[in-house]
Image 1 (cartoon, helix red, strand yellow):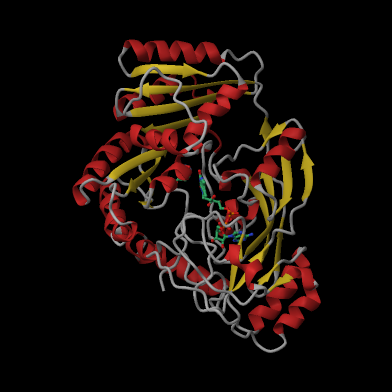
Image 2 (cartoon, rainbow, N blue to C red; image 1 turned 45 degrees about the horizontal axis):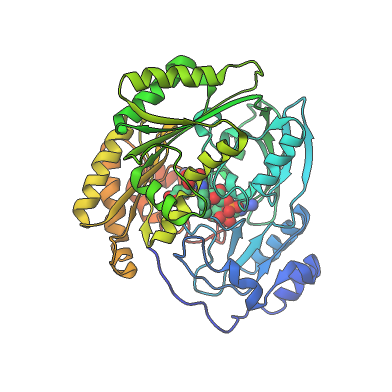
Length: 484
Ligand code: FAD
Ligand code: 2HG
Ligand code: ZN
């Protein structure tokens, strides 16, 4: 559970000569030991953890990382991979022991290749997600993974967490966008799997082991990513809908009419939208009046003549007549489209500004989303009177952020002390609906106990056997994902 231990003030010694040996491989630029420079790497975006570390190393090539890992592994030094440090579950945090070396691949930030015929892009792990999107766009293609942290999160990080985001409903998770991987194992050996093949049934698909492993099995150093045709037609709308069932009914209307046109289908509650309007500068609701439930619909097609505006209007007209949609604003320009998306993407920041919150990144079958929202909200309000449920997220793929904001006036520490109960209240509903306690953010340092409870028996035993086989000394991102 969240903790707030302070970092050790004096730098704990690594084995004698190790820092010099690492500097010998990386140069002085590649080894950071100054506390001021380490500082941003010792706490996480949510402010749940504060760790300590003797050093952060920054290899510039796969060979350098491999050489460093040979040394560190031989010296029994635990390591923590860190990308953009946007993890929502403390996955990239060192613990408080002051023994864990942070490894950042931020200098491995080259796009090695982009091929618009194969529709592939080979990027190093330190490439920022937005940079990868922009490179694809510059070549007339699309790299579709899209999430609020895309200006900071890295390709290594999004693959290591199997990130989802806004476009999963159409393009799948990060895993589905990956064809090949280059990986440095804990002992320094390198899996050279940068194949760009659509078909490759040659033994175990090792690349998939490292996607979603959250840095517990090895380092992802580079990846072959899939590209897609860029959008040539787009249409976006924000709708006020009658209730959760109406939101689902609207999704089905679009799916029945043209599933291939749906790029994103996001749900937001009146509560969350209220926080955005209160805390985010320039945010404005383009509807006549506030509602209890909203949906953001984003349609896209690579066909220049796809009449998405017509599709949007036709479906919304039917839904208005049926009383499912109460009001709608259709983007008339790129600026309006961006403004609508901003109302959705600022939800995490607005919630943070409102006060303390507990996140529940859960998924259920799409048909159960309305029930999930209703039952969890009720359970949470009952658990902590005055608390404010803030469900929002990727309704089209069944992943709702079933978050809870503290009651107004309650001390944040008193509220956060109940994090475990809050998460379990939601998990009880999720379990009943056949869902998962972590849809896209992963397990990290926050939820290994849940993994034990939800994935026990042969499933957990197999995960532990894989961990032992690849990392027998338990030095790769210790304390993350698997229960102690
Ligand atoms: P980090 O946070 O640095 O690390 C994440 C994990 O990956 C850690 O366990 C780390 O050890 C490991 N890791 C990092 N790099 C490597 C590597 N090269 N090799 C092996 N392991 C590595 N997530 C979603 O899925 N969908 C969203 O919509 C979404 N929205 C977000 C919005 C905001 C505002 C924020 C702050 C976060 C959001 N996230 C979302 C969570 C987060 O952005 C993702 O988990 C992202 O994939 C993490 O990338 P990163 O580079 O920051 O990785
Ligand atoms: C999103 O969808 C992210 O915006 C963050 O996954 C969700 O803040 C959250 O709980
Ligand atoms: Zn999300």
